[in-house]
Image (cartoon, rainbow, N blue to C red; front, side):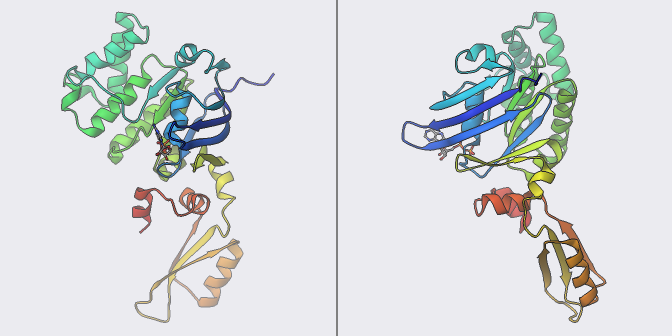
Length: 298
Ligand code: ADP
């Protein structure tokens, strides 16, 4: 018997009222226990895609099922299987972090004791214990982002749908969040998250979906995607015949070619790297590369 996918999307199209075709026919299955990272340039249609998964937006056409539940016919039931962290969610500014978590836990159907326990666990896991009694309105952007993800985690839902959960987080907070998500997966959750950080997609996810101009242009594990890059070996060196030669970067299809160039030029100092997700992204998504990644690459 084949396993029911955590998420099954077929022929998903979203055309906004003004005629913008934000999703142009997306087919995708996500297996239970998987972490899927959705990557794509600004305006590619990632948020539109996630908002349809969570029943916040109704597709123009297509089908979505969540653990076998038809999300278009029965959005409430489908939503009950998810923890959602939207990109720009409203929060109750005057509530403390703890009360905010407890309120949402109650809204998710936990009783008071369960809600308190769930809130305390999530606050602890996300490193927010020191801020638990601060009003949400006084938190920094990064702390607020962690609260939003925490709200999604309450009650351990089987599917987490997180729109850019680590945007604006410092590296330490980002790692805390990765650990929390990995723990949730070990406890049985499935995660779909969008991100602008190729490193995050590489390190955290089992598979990566690249959306570009409303279409899913690539889907696979990191090695599967890297295998699609032409000339995946990158040799960097400085011309040994000149004291301060420019840095040369050359790409090759096979490692043997790299070795023969190193031998031929008599290089003693050089570095060889294999293609990264960033290279895959550059080749597949073309010029529309995320701003942060361009900054990193420069
Ligand atoms: P991403 O999350 O990848 O940045 P979005 O899903 O937010 O992309 O947007 C995809 C496209 O749909 C963009 O061209 C955006 O301008 C457009 N769009 C998003 N929301 C709306 C809306 N409510 N009405 C019309 N167009 C929209």
